[in-house]
Image (tube, rainbow, N blue to C red; front, side):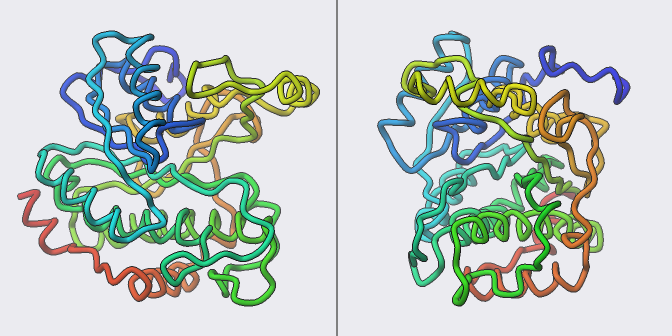
Length: 315
């Protein structure tokens, strides 16, 4: 399948593949799970709310009765939850792909701390760094792939995340954009480190453009926007798309056999459109930034990626 022939509505057969998606009970995560399941994959839906996990699984089953779906509690802001979920996944066996999607999209107005770390950075960045490290061995054994979710907002942000936990100067917008800049930088840095250590796992980044719930079809228990939300979101129709369409770039990065490690995918028109190769913001490609963030994440999570053991697991 040529790159230009990719069809997000007709994915390759994923029978026999297993993918884990964080933040799978709403929005992009849910629709990514639905698309993967429809293509025959075994999908592990994760989330921090057990009732929402039940709703999401039921919704996938309604559209794909034969879908191979399981659920797993996982709160990426909580290191104990991350380690417990990772241990469960390792015990269950095969893992072909990891979609690191969960995140705080609408940060609190005031800086909040959880587990000693700023909430947005802990949820969007630290939890995913730790989870990817904890699951590196099964990913390597399957010669799999991890996809980190970035944002088009990083291209219009002028500052580097030199204070990623925003001890000073916190604003909701800054917290969100810095977390996505950090995510993108870590994704690119991870692929370089994996290559350098000979670990057969690819690390990519994807962004969904400008995807809104009001332009997304209703799904009971998953996407039920108010009439006002639909009205307001539809006013922005020329520059927005649905969450389902936003998930296309994430899924392509995860399953396209021709995708390269270190690549980024996003909508063709930046905010909307079919998924294609995109270019990460220049600031996120700075190697010194990636190195600083990597050390900060190791210190904060107490997780060191087991590159050598992962390489042996793949041999």
